[in-house]
Length: 470
Image 1 (cartoon, rainbow, N blue to C red):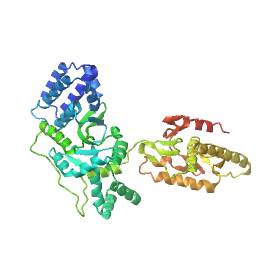
Image 2 (cartoon, rainbow, N blue to C red):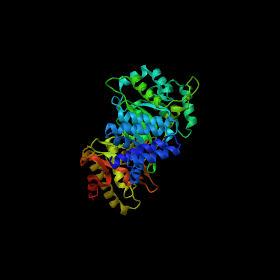
Image 3 (cartoon, helix red, strand yellow):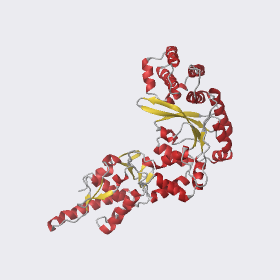
Image 4 (cartoon, rainbow, N blue to C red):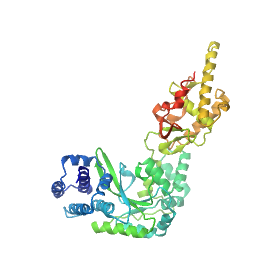
């Protein structure tokens, strides 16, 4: 074995030892023996410590089958070294079997630094990044059978469309009062938007907007119809990563019940118990279920992730957006987009002051300043596809003020999604200077010189050309 493969072996063995949160003396003795068997050095262990389980499985998949079968026997023996294969160990072994040996089910391990508060260990979540009509129909038709099959293993099956339906069936008055009680700081408009979002929730939008963008499941940007099952966690360097088994549904032969039975049979063969805890609580008229995934969904949707949002001025598509949260200021027209971009440029030197001077001697230089500002605006207006000579006169307060108001309203309307949105709002200080508080690093540009990867807007050809106008 190569060093990277030995490290992958060590990663799996260490995860198995720690899976049930009890490190038994016999497990350590067996691990010492296995290190000799696989020639695992201290350097290999250090490499394993920095390796995620998903990476380890990816590496082991390239080993020959005989080596993998021998390794799986080793893992099985290790879980039984204390006389019992705990649930956590059985889950990890099930994930190994699927990823290393399954020839009929495509699958992979996802390892992400996800806060454990978002998902309970006994949940199975149906996910998809694009709506699949056949799979959704099959799940709805067999929902009861699917749910009962997963219950045999102590799992709660979560199917987003039915969760959303339960919210739809809840009295609007009750739902509104509950949300207001749980989130008293939310405005009435924000509560209405939240309830609307919940009732219109779809699996694909939840997968992309909430799991990928907000919670950080980077592998779910383009995921086929699958079941997501948590199989444990690993300490990787200074982070604790949650590990999920992602079982892809065979779209050629959509046999949901067969796929699930295969999983439950494999899991129960590795792990058996006389006691399984299941909740029988249900939504009923006049009652709001606030537990399990219903609580988690509410928490996820109201969670404001502390991420640094960048504002992207995109001249190729003629838009201004916040790519990290997929928010576009779509209500703005060319003239407002150009004006906002001008304020970005001028904010680096303190902003723009449209206030006339109090002394007559200063009017000449003030008028030159306004003409310079207008010329810069016209150049930006042209970059957005307009004609220079038709650029609105922003020195005219009657034209400028409504534009600034529309820009402000467009950002405020997306305040719930944009982290520290107030940084991007145009403000006016006591001296009458308009500026934007966000740091220069927060602004990106995509233009015809930088089509693939956006760059900082202050290094763009446009802004460099603006600097030559005088």
